[in-house]
Length: 142
Image (cartoon, rainbow, N blue to C red; front, side, top):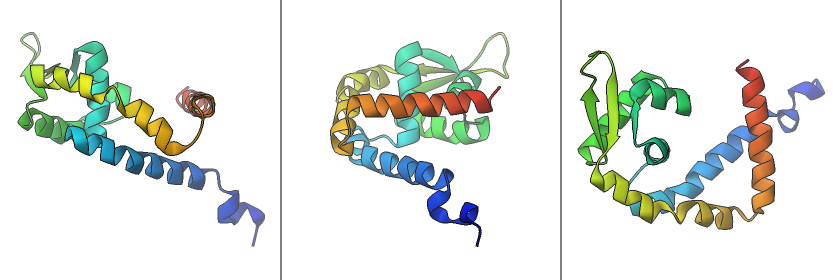
């Protein structure tokens, strides 16, 4: 068997495994907020920008509208966001934080710190990993 085909020599496998592990480590912290990881990502975008279109959120999170629409509907049912059709172009759906969605930001402030503690690595190591991943993603999207 070629060494290239050994699992231990694959770049994708540890990246995949780490992504799954990190998301699972978020779970207990996000359960306290009653949100899923994808909902948390949407909230992060909205806490920063307050209002975005579905396509703007999708662009930032690398998700298509087929994935986002049911996610946003569930968030609207939880009263975290409001979905409103744009008055100028009905094809555009604006997503706005509700007061409840805004209040959740205060409770979520501890999540990043708790996650770093839970991963047992330094902030510097995580920033290095993040920068390498962003460089690879940037190169892929050129």
